[in-house]
Length: 73
Image (cartoon, rainbow, N blue to C red; front, side):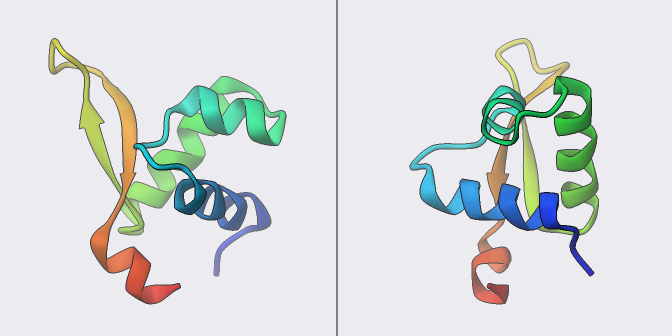
């Protein structure tokens, strides 16, 4: 079962034409940055998103909606 926040994040990812950043989620939902990151990590664990590392490759900076996630909508 997805929470309302998780559903709204998935909806936001569908409308954007690029990978989702935690700041996009925090701004759109008016929530704390850490809460946005935590929720995106939960969605990654559930298989909805795939993390994308930054230029250095150590930190996840973007999240991409998974291909299988589009079929589950």
